[in-house]
Length: 356
Image (cartoon, rainbow, N blue to C red; front, side, top):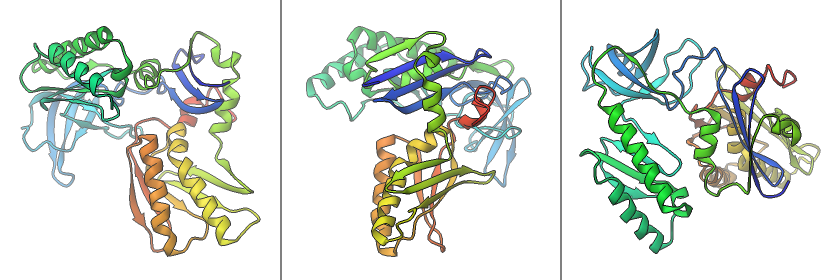
């Protein structure tokens, strides 16, 4: 299975699932949340009503309608009772109010429209000067009728797309943004659904475009993708030369344990630690794990910490994850923080893959 393959399928309960496989290895996996989950999922936009301030937390609770509540951290300029569009930022545990923001983004395959943040920018990954010039002219034309204060970011996929497709994409996002941001009255309600797994796949896997796209019922089975997924979601991963790592979620944090196996030499420990950190962002993404992450590395000297941090930062940049290094504990554990942008994959697939 060479090249980039995107497979779009459905689970038995109708939910959507998408897998990106690169040279036979699972690179990304997107799954719709459980059917019983409420609509307040990352990316969903609501007309919210500001509620009581939470002084100890520095924000306010926001009524989203249908019995749903969100937490708006920066609510200092919004009086209780104010109606405004808000967007869900991340996943939370059942029963907790999801974080929301009033800085709403309208994201598509090629563009991001930013109400309240004027200006036009192109992805830095678009290097060709002629392409940048052409896209700048195109975005100027597409944004000519946008309200004052609307901004635009052209994503990297726009650099390899047809101009007409990019123009239509921008215009559609601007039109949607104008309609949504005009909602300032009525009862709290859902304005824009969170993107499902298939929409996210088309949006996020466009650069580079997959060599092959399969969008049909049962394609996961015909490609043996369930076996590939099962292997990728295991707690234990081999690091080579007998070394291995375990990634285990707990209620409070994600614990990562790195071991060298039979070779306990300093050189083996460093190799195992480097291998584990390089693949950690991808592992967390595939398994939908986030929040506080604590890494118990194989024995490493304090002199090696700077090198290991460099390895970790490079892995984070390569993965594109919203992830940061918090520092080292007194016991020598490396602490990380990752945004909760997905549900834990094992939980959303447990009915389909009970052996996970």
